[in-house]
Image 1 (spheres, rainbow, N blue to C red):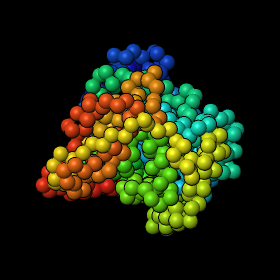
Image 2 (image 1 turned 180 degrees about the vertical axis):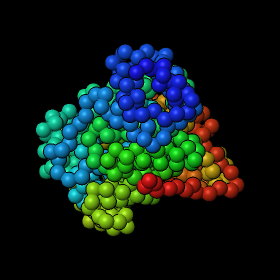
Image 3 (image 1 turned 90 degrees about the horizontal axis):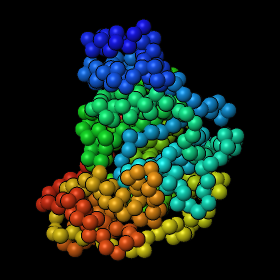
Length: 433
């Protein structure tokens, strides 16, 4: 078998078989096939696409290129959730204890973040003492006994994907549905999930800016998951403005606590209930999404979801008193108001740019070496569709530096007030096939 034949076959629009896909993935991972040939194949895939069988084969070839996490010792159906990213995306902090409180095992592996704010682990480390460096044995035992645990990503998962993604980044082939879908799904499958729930974002703060592109990606990932034996569902949700109100690490943790108390922002609460319902159904704890939603709402109303969050934090060494005393979380020295310049309706809050403003405060990383300031960030006091009058506080900047003129300039460019406007749709579609 020759790589050039595989390139020519895909260039001419023909489907690759499993053996051909495994040949190029293993050869590239091992260093036997050079970058320039894989670049050529990636460009051929970019223009000629892949069918469902090819996408599934590519995903599994990348899964099999490295380590796989074995969660078989954990009782029950293990459901993983993945978001394609966004600004103020606090969902995992709420979802993990919420679905665990109704009996769904949550064995979550998370990473640190590059971008607007930290990853889930950075946010959890806002809690003094919280530890993600736990052994596999302790991890499994915690999930079996308490239904929820979170550890840092480790091991040599999907090395083929890491190499291929780096190559796509410099060859103009990032925006390819089969390559994006197989990249995301390979990591989820290698992490040991039995079932997968996907939150595919669309809008200015999302990777997929248009609804059509987001829908194509969602269908691709759901089909891959189902084709390789993982029950998979997806939703397409809005990221034209930040989700919820908090953007930052400790700020988002506080918002998660409020949401588990039933006092969270409406959009965050709705998204959590929608995603959580899918997780509960896939875990076979409810037969319908409606039944699952009622279970989750009762868990919030009864306090059992909040109690599960407290147990989760203390099980991993965290100071669980922050549930009752959130003021003990890291905080910023200054709170600066960003005020409306005129009367009207907020018609735009460009999620990505507001996220960048938060990163400029120190809430996120531009490089892996950057240190995050856990207490800083932005809290939205108004959202798209809200009426404001001149002088109203649209948002509060939480900063450890007194001068934030550059942040204010960025926000001025990102927020629009006009005479008329409407609230954006939060949940666009639910995808099951």
